[in-house]
Length: 465
Image (cartoon, rainbow, N blue to C red; front, top):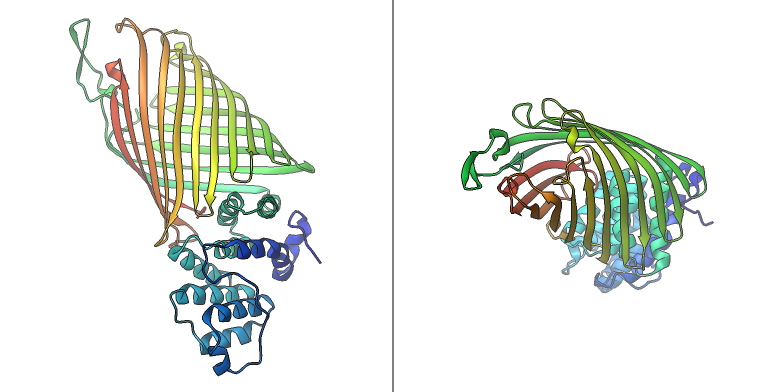
């Protein structure tokens, strides 16, 4: 009997029916793992042979026999043969860990299975079948963030549209069984210039020197960031969802001048279709910036996730926010943004991104009104030794409308941003993997106040690994 992962009753079953629902996906991954030497081709199950005759079978074939025995539920005999006739060739360690992981998974020892699969992927992240088994193990253990992370990678790199749909259905099933979503984070944030201040103490305006205010000069130090976010999803109809959420986020450095606290709320209606989904919603935030400033923002947003073809997907967000400042009311106005993020799944361990977007901000002062646009590239790459790398580079151009006071002409800015993170995915504490993020910003401008550079670090933990 075939069980569809979109059926909620599936998740009340034990491991056996859940495994049946993923069997097609795992078989596709198994047969398509061209980067996995000796891990494909079906072989009839052979049992009852002596250990001596089994040891005489070539290792590639022995591996396939043991794999099919475990899939068929003959785990005790497979475990005995694996111990009696260990592998010795160059794939020995990975094959042994993988088969022992499958045995542990079949017995419900998901922690041991996860450990084995992660160790194999740390050695070789290109092993698609191992990743599929890890995703299913995390799914069974209800470690949803990790399961979704690997299912999305598998979907983007799936060899056929049918295989991608199977992975996508499991992602939908995870979302359906967990209407509540809770997340929290806390991290240290060292920075060489956390206020984006200039290094100059004086600037020349009209040939005369002016002293730069202390709060506008470069500030360095170690800060703290943290927050929590929660959402609940209602399902009023097929392929239709209503999502409500709220969050609290803060950044704190020495003194109150540079403290930042944001409380946000959002509600959206999500409609899924054959190649993606559309979300229509409203978002609002209340921000306490520094010692006195309070900023209120509210407005609509539209997000679209669409699969262009088997390898390429695009995430699009359109948003318009009305902004109101308590003190700097001359900044009151509105901001419209459009962001596009294209992803290309090269393989299950490598994803390339193209980033493009624009913004229009209007205020009560025309010299503060501006147009901006950006473009960039990003790369997600899993490396050996359990290292995951993500790097992103962007260039942003900003053009102001009116002549800036004392500058005598409109301000023009160019900003370069580079962010990189490294995650140790085969090491976890309480189900979280350590991540270190580095950021670099360089801003050039015809205004001395907007020329600056900064380096920053962020130490955090993540569930999506």
